[in-house]
Image (cartoon, rainbow, N blue to C red; front, top):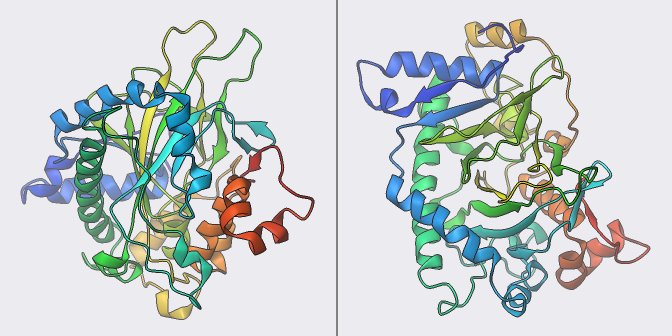
Length: 368
Protein backbone atom coordinates (compact mmCIF):
# COMPACT_ATOMS: atom_id res chain seq x y z
CA UNK A 1 0.00 0.00 0.00
CA UNK A 2 1.34 3.45 -0.85
CA UNK A 3 2.02 5.77 2.04
CA UNK A 4 -1.29 7.08 3.24
CA UNK A 5 -2.95 7.87 -0.10
CA UNK A 6 -5.27 4.89 0.25
CA UNK A 7 -8.40 4.59 -1.88
CA UNK A 8 -10.00 1.69 0.02
CA UNK A 9 -9.99 0.21 3.50
CA UNK A 10 -8.13 -3.12 3.82
CA UNK A 11 -9.82 -6.32 5.01
CA UNK A 12 -7.85 -8.45 7.48
CA UNK A 13 -8.76 -12.03 8.36
CA UNK A 14 -8.47 -12.26 12.14
CA UNK A 15 -8.19 -16.05 12.06
CA UNK A 16 -4.73 -15.58 10.52
CA UNK A 17 -3.56 -13.97 13.77
CA UNK A 18 -4.48 -17.12 15.68
CA UNK A 19 -2.51 -19.55 13.51
CA UNK A 20 1.28 -19.85 13.72
CA UNK A 21 1.52 -20.38 9.95
CA UNK A 22 -0.23 -17.11 9.05
CA UNK A 23 0.37 -14.88 12.09
CA UNK A 24 3.39 -13.14 10.57
CA UNK A 25 1.37 -12.14 7.51
CA UNK A 26 -1.45 -10.81 9.67
CA UNK A 27 0.96 -8.76 11.78
CA UNK A 28 2.60 -7.28 8.67
CA UNK A 29 -0.81 -6.39 7.19
CA UNK A 30 -1.92 -4.91 10.51
CA UNK A 31 1.24 -2.79 10.75
CA UNK A 32 0.62 -1.41 7.27
CA UNK A 33 -3.06 -0.65 8.01
CA UNK A 34 -2.32 0.94 11.39
CA UNK A 35 0.43 3.20 10.07
CA UNK A 36 -0.93 4.15 6.65
CA UNK A 37 -4.72 3.96 6.90
CA UNK A 38 -5.87 4.00 10.51
CA UNK A 39 -8.92 1.93 9.52
CA UNK A 40 -9.45 -1.71 8.61
CA UNK A 41 -12.14 -4.36 8.34
CA UNK A 42 -11.74 -7.40 10.57
CA UNK A 43 -13.32 -10.68 9.46
CA UNK A 44 -13.58 -14.10 11.13
CA UNK A 45 -13.40 -12.79 14.69
CA UNK A 46 -14.39 -14.86 17.74
CA UNK A 47 -17.47 -12.68 18.34
CA UNK A 48 -20.52 -14.90 17.85
CA UNK A 49 -22.32 -14.19 14.54
CA UNK A 50 -25.58 -15.35 16.12
CA UNK A 51 -25.17 -12.93 19.01
CA UNK A 52 -24.28 -10.13 16.61
CA UNK A 53 -27.41 -10.82 14.57
CA UNK A 54 -29.48 -10.79 17.75
CA UNK A 55 -28.11 -7.33 18.60
CA UNK A 56 -29.02 -6.09 15.11
CA UNK A 57 -32.54 -7.46 15.43
CA UNK A 58 -33.11 -5.57 18.69
CA UNK A 59 -32.05 -2.13 17.43
CA UNK A 60 -35.31 -0.93 15.80
CA UNK A 61 -37.25 -1.91 18.95
CA UNK A 62 -34.84 0.15 21.06
CA UNK A 63 -35.62 3.31 19.11
CA UNK A 64 -39.34 2.51 19.02
CA UNK A 65 -39.64 2.51 22.81
CA UNK A 66 -42.38 4.76 24.25
CA UNK A 67 -41.28 8.35 24.69
CA UNK A 68 -41.80 8.23 28.46
CA UNK A 69 -39.40 5.27 28.68
CA UNK A 70 -36.80 7.09 26.60
CA UNK A 71 -37.22 10.05 28.95
CA UNK A 72 -36.71 7.80 31.99
CA UNK A 73 -33.32 6.66 30.67
CA UNK A 74 -32.21 10.02 29.26
CA UNK A 75 -28.49 10.60 29.54
CA UNK A 76 -29.04 13.67 31.70
CA UNK A 77 -30.14 11.32 34.50
CA UNK A 78 -26.68 9.70 34.60
CA UNK A 79 -23.47 11.26 35.98
CA UNK A 80 -21.67 8.70 33.80
CA UNK A 81 -23.04 10.14 30.53
CA UNK A 82 -24.86 6.89 29.76
CA UNK A 83 -28.38 6.65 28.40
CA UNK A 84 -30.63 7.92 25.64
CA UNK A 85 -29.97 11.07 23.57
CA UNK A 86 -32.59 12.69 21.37
CA UNK A 87 -32.22 13.22 17.63
CA UNK A 88 -30.01 16.18 16.72
CA UNK A 89 -28.82 16.81 20.29
CA UNK A 90 -25.14 17.23 19.37
CA UNK A 91 -23.33 19.56 16.98
CA UNK A 92 -20.01 18.90 15.22
CA UNK A 93 -18.17 21.72 13.47
CA UNK A 94 -21.18 24.01 13.67
CA UNK A 95 -23.78 21.61 12.28
CA UNK A 96 -26.30 19.35 13.98
CA UNK A 97 -25.52 15.65 13.90
CA UNK A 98 -28.61 14.00 12.45
CA UNK A 99 -28.64 10.99 14.74
CA UNK A 100 -30.39 9.50 17.75
CA UNK A 101 -28.40 7.31 20.13
CA UNK A 102 -28.28 5.19 23.26
CA UNK A 103 -24.97 5.12 25.18
CA UNK A 104 -24.12 2.01 27.19
CA UNK A 105 -20.99 0.50 28.74
CA UNK A 106 -19.48 -2.67 30.11
CA UNK A 107 -20.52 -3.58 33.66
CA UNK A 108 -18.91 -1.35 36.27
CA UNK A 109 -19.70 0.11 39.67
CA UNK A 110 -18.58 3.70 40.08
CA UNK A 111 -15.48 3.86 42.28
CA UNK A 112 -15.31 7.62 42.68
CA UNK A 113 -15.17 8.94 46.24
CA UNK A 114 -15.02 12.43 47.72
CA UNK A 115 -11.64 14.01 47.02
CA UNK A 116 -10.95 11.97 43.86
CA UNK A 117 -10.58 13.71 40.50
CA UNK A 118 -14.02 14.37 39.04
CA UNK A 119 -13.20 12.36 35.95
CA UNK A 120 -13.38 9.16 38.00
CA UNK A 121 -17.15 9.68 38.10
CA UNK A 122 -17.22 9.07 34.34
CA UNK A 123 -17.39 5.32 34.73
CA UNK A 124 -20.43 3.68 36.27
CA UNK A 125 -23.52 1.57 35.54
CA UNK A 126 -25.57 1.86 32.36
CA UNK A 127 -29.22 2.81 32.26
CA UNK A 128 -31.36 0.11 30.63
CA UNK A 129 -34.92 0.06 29.31
CA UNK A 130 -37.47 -1.86 31.37
CA UNK A 131 -37.23 -5.58 30.72
CA UNK A 132 -40.95 -5.97 30.03
CA UNK A 133 -40.78 -3.38 27.23
CA UNK A 134 -37.90 -5.03 25.37
CA UNK A 135 -37.34 -8.53 26.81
CA UNK A 136 -33.78 -9.84 26.57
CA UNK A 137 -32.29 -6.58 25.29
CA UNK A 138 -30.05 -5.88 28.30
CA UNK A 139 -28.76 -9.46 28.55
CA UNK A 140 -28.04 -9.61 24.81
CA UNK A 141 -26.22 -6.27 24.73
CA UNK A 142 -24.19 -7.08 27.84
CA UNK A 143 -23.13 -10.42 26.33
CA UNK A 144 -22.19 -8.68 23.10
CA UNK A 145 -20.11 -6.04 24.93
CA UNK A 146 -18.29 -8.80 26.85
CA UNK A 147 -17.35 -10.60 23.63
CA UNK A 148 -16.26 -7.43 21.81
CA UNK A 149 -14.21 -6.37 24.83
CA UNK A 150 -12.43 -9.74 24.77
CA UNK A 151 -11.70 -9.22 21.06
CA UNK A 152 -10.39 -5.71 21.71
CA UNK A 153 -8.19 -6.86 24.61
CA UNK A 154 -6.63 -9.54 22.41
CA UNK A 155 -6.36 -7.25 19.38
CA UNK A 156 -4.36 -4.67 21.35
CA UNK A 157 -1.72 -7.27 22.23
CA UNK A 158 -1.36 -8.19 18.54
CA UNK A 159 -1.20 -4.52 17.58
CA UNK A 160 1.61 -4.04 20.09
CA UNK A 161 3.60 -6.74 18.29
CA UNK A 162 2.80 -5.20 14.92
CA UNK A 163 4.38 -1.87 15.87
CA UNK A 164 7.54 -3.43 17.28
CA UNK A 165 6.64 -3.82 20.95
CA UNK A 166 6.17 -7.06 22.83
CA UNK A 167 2.64 -8.44 23.32
CA UNK A 168 2.45 -6.54 26.63
CA UNK A 169 3.88 -3.38 25.13
CA UNK A 170 0.66 -1.38 25.51
CA UNK A 171 -0.58 -3.02 28.73
CA UNK A 172 0.68 -0.23 31.00
CA UNK A 173 -1.99 2.07 29.57
CA UNK A 174 -4.73 -0.10 31.08
CA UNK A 175 -5.73 -0.44 34.72
CA UNK A 176 -6.70 -3.69 36.41
CA UNK A 177 -9.84 -5.29 35.00
CA UNK A 178 -12.08 -4.28 37.91
CA UNK A 179 -11.07 -0.63 37.46
CA UNK A 180 -11.67 -0.48 33.70
CA UNK A 181 -14.81 0.30 31.74
CA UNK A 182 -15.36 0.40 27.99
CA UNK A 183 -18.15 2.22 26.20
CA UNK A 184 -20.51 1.62 23.34
CA UNK A 185 -23.54 3.18 21.77
CA UNK A 186 -26.39 2.17 19.51
CA UNK A 187 -26.91 4.81 16.83
CA UNK A 188 -29.75 5.55 14.41
CA UNK A 189 -29.23 7.76 11.35
CA UNK A 190 -32.61 8.47 9.73
CA UNK A 191 -32.93 9.49 6.11
CA UNK A 192 -32.52 13.21 5.40
CA UNK A 193 -35.70 15.15 6.10
CA UNK A 194 -35.87 16.64 2.60
CA UNK A 195 -34.05 16.82 -0.75
CA UNK A 196 -31.93 19.77 0.43
CA UNK A 197 -31.81 18.91 4.15
CA UNK A 198 -28.58 18.24 6.01
CA UNK A 199 -27.08 14.78 5.61
CA UNK A 200 -24.51 15.18 8.41
CA UNK A 201 -25.03 12.02 10.42
CA UNK A 202 -21.96 12.97 12.42
CA UNK A 203 -19.39 15.51 11.29
CA UNK A 204 -15.66 14.92 10.79
CA UNK A 205 -13.98 13.80 14.00
CA UNK A 206 -11.42 11.55 15.64
CA UNK A 207 -12.22 8.93 18.25
CA UNK A 208 -10.68 9.35 21.68
CA UNK A 209 -9.16 6.13 22.97
CA UNK A 210 -6.97 3.36 21.62
CA UNK A 211 -9.27 1.18 19.49
CA UNK A 212 -12.85 1.43 18.19
CA UNK A 213 -14.64 -1.70 16.96
CA UNK A 214 -17.70 -0.81 14.89
CA UNK A 215 -20.61 -2.99 13.88
CA UNK A 216 -22.31 -1.56 10.78
CA UNK A 217 -25.74 -2.86 11.68
CA UNK A 218 -27.56 -2.19 8.41
CA UNK A 219 -26.75 -2.30 4.71
CA UNK A 220 -26.60 1.47 4.31
CA UNK A 221 -23.45 3.19 3.17
CA UNK A 222 -22.45 6.40 4.89
CA UNK A 223 -19.22 5.87 6.84
CA UNK A 224 -16.34 7.74 5.18
CA UNK A 225 -12.66 7.99 6.17
CA UNK A 226 -10.18 10.66 5.12
CA UNK A 227 -6.90 9.82 3.44
CA UNK A 228 -3.71 11.88 3.63
CA UNK A 229 -4.73 14.08 0.72
CA UNK A 230 -8.02 14.95 2.39
CA UNK A 231 -10.17 12.78 0.13
CA UNK A 232 -13.18 11.01 1.63
CA UNK A 233 -13.12 7.25 1.06
CA UNK A 234 -16.24 5.10 1.54
CA UNK A 235 -16.09 2.33 4.15
CA UNK A 236 -19.15 0.42 2.96
CA UNK A 237 -20.69 -2.35 5.05
CA UNK A 238 -18.98 -5.68 4.42
CA UNK A 239 -21.00 -8.66 5.71
CA UNK A 240 -19.31 -10.65 8.46
CA UNK A 241 -16.85 -7.93 9.44
CA UNK A 242 -16.25 -5.25 12.02
CA UNK A 243 -14.65 -1.92 11.17
CA UNK A 244 -11.66 -1.14 13.39
CA UNK A 245 -10.09 2.28 13.77
CA UNK A 246 -7.65 3.97 16.10
CA UNK A 247 -8.14 6.99 18.34
CA UNK A 248 -6.12 10.03 19.29
CA UNK A 249 -4.84 8.49 22.53
CA UNK A 250 -2.98 5.72 20.73
CA UNK A 251 -1.72 8.15 18.10
CA UNK A 252 -0.14 10.28 20.85
CA UNK A 253 1.10 7.23 22.79
CA UNK A 254 2.84 5.72 19.74
CA UNK A 255 4.46 8.97 18.56
CA UNK A 256 2.10 9.13 15.56
CA UNK A 257 3.00 5.62 14.40
CA UNK A 258 -0.57 4.35 14.72
CA UNK A 259 -2.74 6.73 12.79
CA UNK A 260 -5.95 8.26 14.12
CA UNK A 261 -7.96 8.88 10.97
CA UNK A 262 -10.61 11.54 10.54
CA UNK A 263 -14.00 10.07 9.68
CA UNK A 264 -17.64 11.06 9.33
CA UNK A 265 -21.07 9.59 8.61
CA UNK A 266 -23.37 10.72 5.81
CA UNK A 267 -27.04 10.05 6.57
CA UNK A 268 -29.20 8.07 4.12
CA UNK A 269 -30.57 10.19 1.29
CA UNK A 270 -34.05 11.67 1.47
CA UNK A 271 -36.61 9.01 0.61
CA UNK A 272 -34.54 6.08 1.85
CA UNK A 273 -37.16 3.88 3.54
CA UNK A 274 -35.05 2.65 6.47
CA UNK A 275 -32.46 4.24 8.81
CA UNK A 276 -28.79 3.44 9.01
CA UNK A 277 -27.84 1.72 12.28
CA UNK A 278 -24.43 1.20 13.85
CA UNK A 279 -22.92 0.02 17.14
CA UNK A 280 -19.43 1.38 17.90
CA UNK A 281 -17.44 -0.04 20.83
CA UNK A 282 -14.78 2.24 22.34
CA UNK A 283 -11.89 0.47 24.09
CA UNK A 284 -10.70 2.88 26.77
CA UNK A 285 -7.37 3.34 28.53
CA UNK A 286 -6.96 4.05 32.24
CA UNK A 287 -8.46 7.30 33.48
CA UNK A 288 -5.26 8.41 35.22
CA UNK A 289 -2.95 7.84 32.24
CA UNK A 290 -1.01 10.97 31.20
CA UNK A 291 0.44 10.05 27.84
CA UNK A 292 2.78 13.05 27.73
CA UNK A 293 4.54 12.07 30.99
CA UNK A 294 7.92 10.31 30.62
CA UNK A 295 6.61 7.29 32.51
CA UNK A 296 4.34 6.48 29.57
CA UNK A 297 6.92 6.92 26.81
CA UNK A 298 7.40 3.99 24.44
CA UNK A 299 10.51 3.03 22.45
CA UNK A 300 10.10 1.75 18.89
CA UNK A 301 12.39 0.00 16.39
CA UNK A 302 13.90 2.25 13.76
CA UNK A 303 12.22 0.23 11.02
CA UNK A 304 8.77 1.10 12.37
CA UNK A 305 9.68 4.76 12.81
CA UNK A 306 10.88 4.77 9.20
CA UNK A 307 7.49 3.47 8.03
CA UNK A 308 5.81 6.27 9.95
CA UNK A 309 8.09 8.88 8.41
CA UNK A 310 7.53 7.51 4.90
CA UNK A 311 3.78 8.02 5.32
CA UNK A 312 4.07 11.77 5.65
CA UNK A 313 1.71 14.25 7.27
CA UNK A 314 -2.01 14.09 6.70
CA UNK A 315 -4.68 16.59 5.79
CA UNK A 316 -7.65 16.39 8.13
CA UNK A 317 -11.00 18.03 8.69
CA UNK A 318 -10.94 16.92 12.35
CA UNK A 319 -9.28 18.69 15.29
CA UNK A 320 -10.69 17.10 18.46
CA UNK A 321 -8.89 15.41 21.37
CA UNK A 322 -5.59 17.27 21.01
CA UNK A 323 -5.62 17.50 24.84
CA UNK A 324 -4.21 13.97 25.08
CA UNK A 325 -0.83 15.64 24.57
CA UNK A 326 -1.05 17.36 27.97
CA UNK A 327 -3.89 16.06 30.17
CA UNK A 328 -4.93 12.88 31.96
CA UNK A 329 -7.04 10.59 29.81
CA UNK A 330 -9.99 10.84 32.19
CA UNK A 331 -9.92 14.65 32.10
CA UNK A 332 -9.84 14.69 28.29
CA UNK A 333 -12.82 12.38 28.13
CA UNK A 334 -14.79 14.22 30.81
CA UNK A 335 -14.38 17.61 29.15
CA UNK A 336 -15.38 16.12 25.81
CA UNK A 337 -18.54 14.72 27.42
CA UNK A 338 -19.30 18.01 29.18
CA UNK A 339 -19.07 19.96 25.93
CA UNK A 340 -21.17 17.44 24.03
CA UNK A 341 -23.83 17.04 26.73
CA UNK A 342 -24.17 20.29 28.70
CA UNK A 343 -27.50 19.21 30.21
CA UNK A 344 -25.69 16.32 31.94
CA UNK A 345 -22.95 18.68 33.13
CA UNK A 346 -25.48 21.17 34.48
CA UNK A 347 -27.09 18.48 36.64
CA UNK A 348 -24.04 16.48 37.73
CA UNK A 349 -20.94 18.68 37.23
CA UNK A 350 -22.13 22.21 38.12
CA UNK A 351 -18.67 23.75 38.49
CA UNK A 352 -17.52 22.48 35.12
CA UNK A 353 -20.82 23.60 33.63
CA UNK A 354 -20.24 27.16 34.87
CA UNK A 355 -16.71 27.14 33.49
CA UNK A 356 -17.63 26.00 29.98
CA UNK A 357 -21.11 27.53 29.74
CA UNK A 358 -20.99 30.86 31.64
CA UNK A 359 -24.05 32.11 29.74
CA UNK A 360 -26.22 29.17 30.78
CA UNK A 361 -27.51 26.05 29.08
CA UNK A 362 -27.02 26.18 25.30
CA UNK A 363 -29.59 24.77 22.92
CA UNK A 364 -27.19 22.08 21.71
CA UNK A 365 -24.03 20.35 22.84
CA UNK A 366 -20.99 21.17 20.71
CA UNK A 367 -18.17 18.61 20.65
CA UNK A 368 -15.82 21.04 18.87
